[in-house]
Image (cartoon, rainbow, N blue to C red; front, side):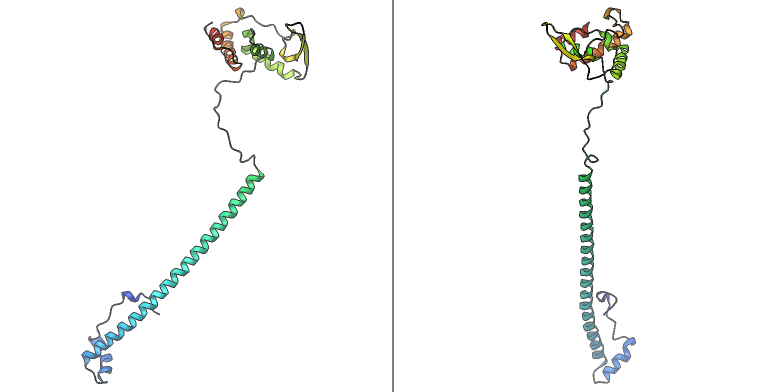
Length: 218
């Protein structure tokens, strides 16, 4: 079987001096030199055609072998991908919290306002509440009070209908707490601190727009 592509082979010139000896052997059998050259050329063509057929078979077998290798490699890769996916799904199943979807909410631009529960209850009920509770000083007092307050403690207070209600102690004004500065006695800086915070909390507790607007224009 040829090692080079026989399709690229060029038929020799059998009438040349190089093939004098080959022609002479045929001439001795009773044919002319010209007939001998044609016979050599015909024999070469027959052999070359046979080599072309063998070459085609060899190339076809090589292509099939490469295709089998590629198919086997792809099958191995597919099996590996499936095993990795199965392992990944098992990992997600075991560690659900690790792969929980994140909710991309808007980051608040304003600091959290945590006034005293007494002030919160007043605003929630729609009652008057002093601006003092929304100043820096009032928020600091509320923070300190929350750190020491017992959340489960209830106190009894009279209601407007003459009955008594149990409410959280933190929601009632502490008589021992620091005195509340009246609105008219607030410094201008404190008023600027408290007013926007109080309006924000009024919106949180669904105050009517006209009431909120009245405070804004105040």
